[in-house]
Image (cartoon, rainbow, N blue to C red; front, top):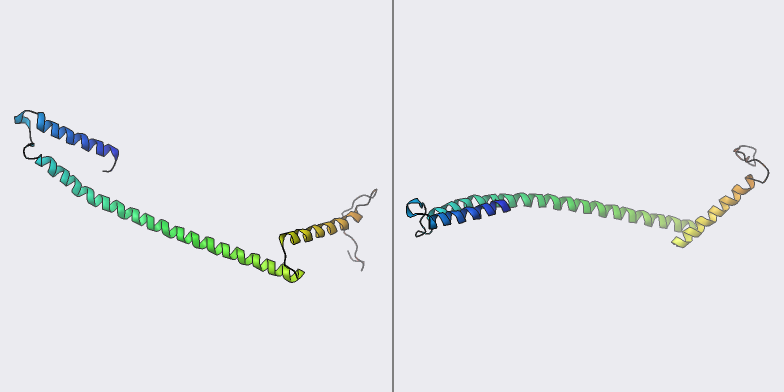
Length: 148
């Protein structure tokens, strides 16, 4: 009932009705303009009496859809908040753990410097195993106690 096609068709119907009952010969008219197009008024009132409940039904269905969407949005927001709080707690726990190990507040620069230092130490350990002229072996190094 709310489509553009319906509105155009209803408008054309009313225009044709009024035109016929105004311009047609007196004996062919079925709704008198003198009486205010009573039959047309009754037909439009009947159509409106069916349109009102349909509009209310459509609004109720839209309200139900909106309610479901709002509930889903609320649940999604709760999950996002819980995830954010969990990640924040984990970051704090990591910083506390790193602070206990290093006995200073760990910043990003401090962490980078420590990681670079460890990487240099690992590179220095790896270099003596690959001496020039000697073929690289995959044998594991022998420990001081003689075990492999």
